[in-house]
Image (cartoon, rainbow, N blue to C red; front, side, top):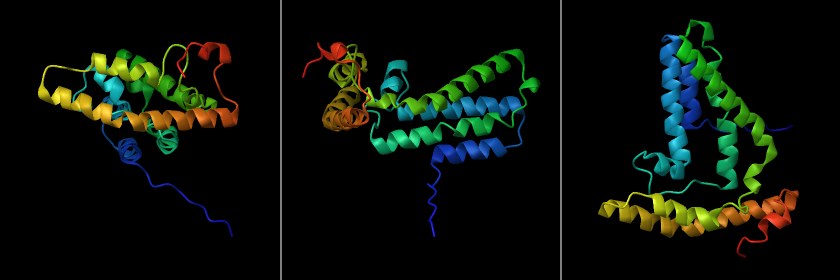
Length: 188
């Protein structure tokens, strides 16, 4: 017999499933999806949260472990489950456009997952060798908490580097790497 293992739903997947089954008007559910997804994106990408001024995540880095990447690929399907029962024709013009753009982005994320771009963790334009310093440069720096957040990020940097090395090694194993010439000027 073959055992089938299903992964437990994450809080994001559960929230999307609940929203998909919600009976509120389509416009309300769509707006709720946008809020839910924005919060999800901020927590999954604290660097982006810092860039846009989303509070409370300036002490963290994105989890780019293989497990977290696979989880996010699975979670990428969750918003589609919310969009499917929404009747686009019942939405106003602005919400129809927002619906279309959001759906397109969600579908492109799902389709793009097959390309394993996570294995291209560094290139001639960036990677951990530059992004760490850039993130500290743009991070808030007005309060003691701001500096404590910077220290927390610096203390967590070895994990970011280790995760990057794992991704690069998997890329080498898989034959997914940037062209050698583009890495010529990246420091060893």
